[in-house]
Image (cartoon, rainbow, N blue to C red; front, side, top):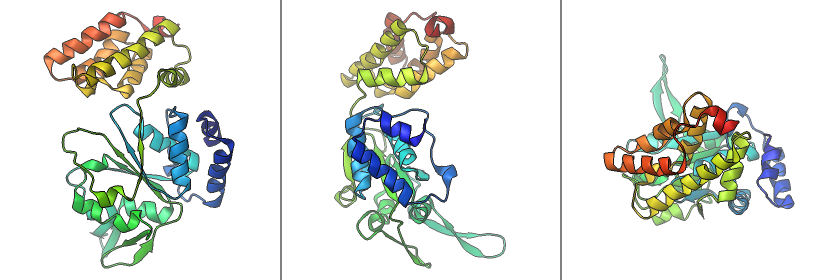
Length: 303
């Protein structure tokens, strides 16, 4: 799918689509290999409209919400339709300021500056995805304050001050309740426009499956969709953990079926066995078995 095709599929107003195209024309891309090619499109016109409006306004975007709401899919799609190279930072305890901005390194002859992903994104006018931003140490994120606010500068100790490209945007993603996460401080949150991601609607989930597997049997697809929402409902009532609410895993199961596994075997590998609690694993397996016959093969699933 082309960028223009994705914009049309997203259901955006025509004037907003025009502005995105003007943005692409205005800002050349000097690293086209870094423009993502999403495997899936994000479905949800209201979310698209809010996200695009924020980015067109020069805002950075913070995507929040529970698991399986498509935060990373949307981030990839936004970089794709805006035609911007993308840099990804997955936060963990060892990510520090030097990793984000850059550090000195020895090239075999002399000490040189090795730029980090935030520096590269700022210089090349990219879209920087700050994944699981609420796992970052506060001292690491503090160096980004002047990058993310109206100053749009980066001071590199011992080197020059650089100005962030007007095409650059930063998109943070965060889930609630994961081990190692923390509350974001007020100073950081104030530098983002916050978009709370809803759980995908049934009609949009059907579009997503149809786009990837147009030959899927309609009755099986219907039960497949109901399975996803049943697991989500059980997770919301703490009957099972959120590990079972894995939209990526559901789609991967269909991929495994296409390559020779039965649907029951595939769902066990991509959903049930991701729980390492024996009781929960069996409960999830029973939910799957009650809805979808385990022995269904590729020929029966896809016709």
